[in-house]
Image 1 (cartoon, one colour):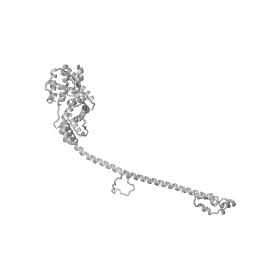
Image 2 (cartoon, chains in turn blue, purple):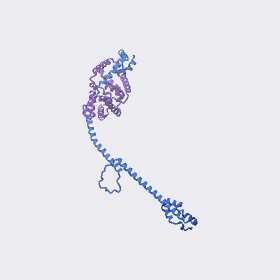
Image 3 (cartoon, chains in turn brown, cyan):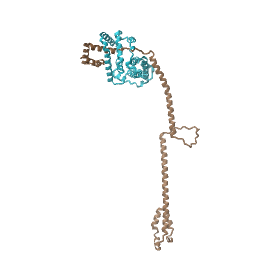
Image 4 (cartoon, chains in turn yellow, brown):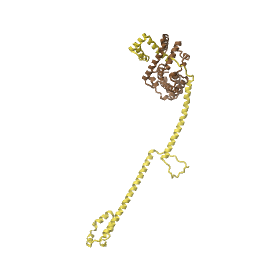
Length: 224
Length: 203
């Protein structure tokens, strides 16, 4: 082992990582090389001085008391602030809850309650119940709207039906007033029950046909 | 302080027992101060940093994981605070006032040889350490003084263990070069060899 190799291994030696045959080689060189011996002495001196030399300055005698004083002085501050913070947080939460309550249950504008009257504080209803009420209200509203629509449809249909009945009545009157030859009238007089026009009238306007029946065809004035 | 005792004290400190934390301060304040003082080289600054480190440690005790040694956790906080202080004051290692090294250190290092040569070598070593970069200096101090592994030093410095090894290697190289000229005097080397062996035997 030469000096360069020795110097490369100094770190491993100082770290206690040099072992086996390499350690023997290292020691052998150290014994016979004065230069490397001095290098090792220097490094071991560094270790000795760094490990054992006390600093020039020393801590003040009251250092521990000062540290504990700082710690103690900080603790009461923290403990004093903690309840204050809790109260502040609770206040903020209460205000937020009150705002939410007012937003969910707005006061009626025409409420007869005087503003000077104390407002009864009622606990906020659970969210689920409030939602169901809204659903029920919505269903009721939709049902009413649907009923109104149905009523309107029926009214339209009724009005349309009346118009048809009126038109049919006028048609029947017109048809009855048509001048027909006597033989045709007599021949058809017996067929009154099978008159398709009467059947049609019965279908559309129940009860209208009997009124027509009361009018004897034979007596109809056959004139335009 | 045994590991079990330390664990018990930390548990009590976590529960808010001030006396338990006082024990921790007492146990670690000197080591912490030595490290911080070597970093910032200002007595008052080092004390302030140490105080801030302990206060921070007390407030963050819940975040301490027993996966690492308590000292490693403390040194991690101390290193970051020291770095912040150095950055603020720009008191980098190159601006060290070497006049501070001198007769004061004689009294502080009673365990070492007290000859003129010994004082000269110690002064030289510390001057060379001051010339190291902050990560190199921290690595060397934590490795030699605190006996930390490269893995733990990496945790303190916030870098991989391989990088710490590299810092240690470069630091040793620079220290070796700084001392090379001095150690041509065989008498000095011999004196320090005996001094080192004596200290190692004491440890």
